[in-house]
Length: 197
Image (cartoon, rainbow, N blue to C red):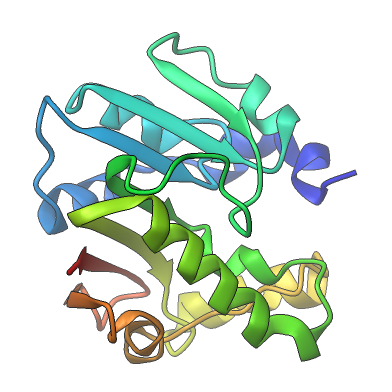
């Protein structure tokens, strides 16, 4: 069973308000009514529900069917799947969002395989993004106090095996194929906007 299947029933209470992350998305990417958005690792749809007011269509892709079952907003399309093999055509989305998700891609995977796994994830994310499309990522900075606390809770208490990145480290994963802008880099919660060339 996916570890997030076990958390689905309480996730929204534990996760709390996502207004900060939504504001970071709005600050870092221009959303338009004609766009299709893929929310990877979107879980219970906390961000997708807000995005649905701004764009034509929002699709949530998540490995946990129980998390997706918690989405009640009928405007949101739900798809069970993995970022390593995204079940959509090449260049299908105008915007891809990853909020509090990228560091989870290594969960349950041996550390020796992390680099290869992340490389595959990056490749798949860019594949489904249209040329000149934008990827917006909101992550926790492990160099801040809150970031270190989240890292400790996820890896030492929950045993997830999450790989957290500082803004510059995350930039390096995408820089060969994209233009990159960082927002809120000194805060515990930062955003990267990555525009596909």
